Length: 225
Length: 328
Image 1 (tube, each protein chain N blue to C red):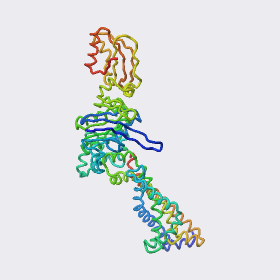
Image 2 (cartoon, one colour; image 1 turned 60 degrees about the vertical axis):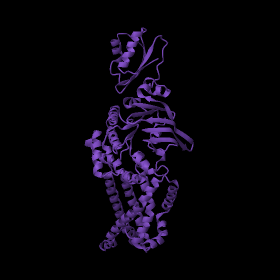
Image 3 (cartoon, chains in turn orange, purple; image 1 turned 120 degrees about the horizontal axis):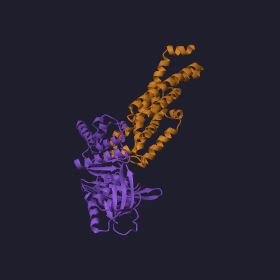
Image 4 (cartoon, each protein chain N blue to C red; image 1 turned 60 degrees about the horizontal axis):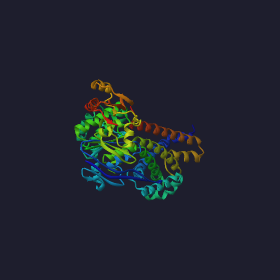
């Protein structure tokens, strides 16, 4: 191991990097879900085959979501710097990074949750309608609970994607393993550090993936246990 | 009472419009079990969904207990639906809720207190004979058990009407029979009016009081089940009751009768019994019966003896044993 690496560890930079990566990923994902999930519900419900079709609204939201999704994150990030300044008062550091991650993740989460909602059996929704449920009650008593296992699997995938974004955000002043890999590794020609960061990222992704899927499986009542 | 007046439903598709049902005029009385039978594509599913306005008819009226559904506000419509239970071929239980919570669902919608809802759900679970499955999830139940839970759920909000959309079509013959018996029990003990949609004659035969035969999007024939069975007027009814087609009447002279085997009278040795009791031989001209799930369905064409009194003896015997027959 190179002395630089040992120094990084001794100074606590590496540990802080791990912590920042996890914390940025989870905070950003959480906020992205707060906004993205309702958009996913809206996309599902207002679809022409949905429980409350509003085709024009569905079209508008769909187009906006697609526009944001088609911009590569690195470009979106740079373009959103002014927005970060307006929302959190700075275009640097972790706070700004959360804003950018959230902006990038909302459309992703919206599509992800939409596809989970569309997996819900149409028959179950029809049964709820036949029992006299209002649209609102179908959403929170049928659609969301029935989609829960698929939503959880989607959340795991989203977390991993957002973690990937967070590493990229290291290039423009965010913290975390991405930043360490770039400023201590790549820019100082220290490949050991780059590889260590890659390894640590892989471990974090694996942990999120395995734990998340375990929880999702446990929560699914369709599986006969 | 449910009145359907001049009901019509047309779907617009990219290839033009498709009429699913038209000219439907049916009155369903309180307390009866009313069957609607037809081949697939006849419009049965659309018709049943028009009754609770899951599908809004293109024209015509649905009047339930004097209220015209088309004139209700959305809120009133939802309230009315709470009074009309519905069970489906695919059961449609909430997969992430256990049995007792599934049955509580319509009560939650109606705003009942949780403790009261659970109590009511437990009593319904007892009615359908599944008290020991309260905490089970739908994935742990068999098809028949799922349908029993679905029936309990459909009745939970003290519904007066129960719509069954091919409720037994996904079940095996034994389970079908027990679910049909349950429906009959519910009808007799709770007085729930039941509307049964099916493509299977045996479902109509075993529980329905009256039947409407649907063909080509409209009602081809309507009447008491016994009458329609004995003497089907429409081509489609004949086809459904006698899938092999009506037997040809041979040129033999004399009176002939067609005895219908509807699965109920077949276990008794009907013909030999008749011959012995009436002490007169008959000539079997043609027979076509099919064994469906241990019971015989079909028809036998019999030539009656020439002498009047013997012939009358035979028809009297058939009447006394409530066997369905018709003169040909």
